Amino acid sequence: MKAEIIAVGSELLLGQITNTNAKFISARLAEAGIDVYYHTVVGDNPDRLAQAIQLAQQRADILIFSGGLGPTKDDLTKETIARQLGCGLVSDSEALETIQQYFIRVGKDMTENNKKQALVLEGAKVLPNRHGMAPGMAIEKDGVQYLLLPGPPHELEPMFENEAIPYLLGVFGKQDIISSKVLKFQGIGESELEYRIQTILEKQTNPTIAPLASPGAVILRMTAKAKSEEEAQQLILPVEQEIRSVVGEYIYGVDNDTLASKTTELLLQNDWSISAAESLTSGMFMAELGSEPGIGNALKGGVVVYNKEMKIEQLGILPSLLEYHGIVSAECAEALAESVKERFATTFGVGLTGAAGPESHDGEPPGTVWIGIAAEGMKTASYKLQLSGTRNSNRKRSVQFALHYLIRKMKEKKELKY
Image (tube, one colour):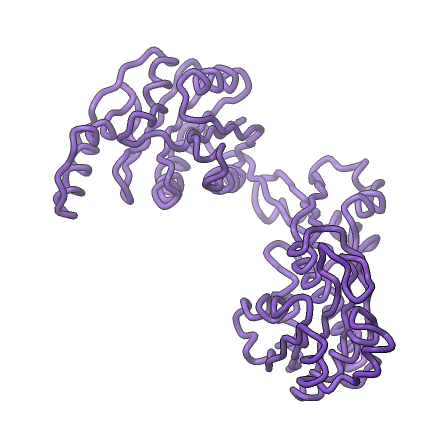
């Protein structure tokens, strides 16, 4: 079965809200074994929506609409679909009762236009809305299934889970499931990763392999279709092992792992502690770690030393070091890491300094970043980045690279420990 998701709402096209509904629906359809080939977004315009429906009818067996079921004049989804299918709209008594009871419950008068929300396609199966007012509906016409769902995610998600999925499985029966596993990489670009695993990509069938770029990482998604989750994962396993044999050194996690979560995991597993001295990132590194549950057992604290005077006053960095080597330097990054590690008595100390941009800083071009990592019983290391983004994207990427190099350092220390 092939599905197309059509989101209706001008606010989506204007960038005022994010289309999280399509992501949710796609994931649930994959679990049910239904392929999604197209996502379409249409504004609140009946003519353009009609064109989108006509196109989708030619390439999908299931059309799933989100949004446009409300009481206002620009909520035109069901009216437009009714015209396309040549059917009428009728008031659903249960839906109308739900709407009336809502207004009684909140102590407000119900305006006449709210009755519009109780209108459903004639002959459709009504999908009750237990978290809002507008009901959903499902109807078949000329071999194509049409599902209409409300736009608000807190209404759509339970309706899709509890009403739409059972309906589709009842119509089409159990399909092969689609299961994925994601490998996450740092320290290697998307194009280089694809080049390194080219021979693996060329022979892919089931599972398929898709390299993707995302903020802070490169992702490789392996997707298999099989009778069960277990069978799909068994198909994925040998492909994953082959990929790891080629580029495993760059893999930091899988699926929902993040650099911060993997850092936290390693710190807690080994009873290690960490502190940070931040210049260009101004606390962003510690904030990223601070979002992880349990990090309070490892993150002792740190300092933001944004200017030269604070580096000297708060951390005791030698003025001669800063004068001779500069603030944007390996020596400064290492001194920051070593000093904060000593002052907070932690296993690891991280120092970040650089020229975030858009202007040069201390004679270094924008995007120049130095990361220092000091570790108990190990030689202090520094890493240079030459980034080319905006000021804030450079700062965010610096944090991600710092976590990446820290994970590498922790893995080295773990090997020494055992």
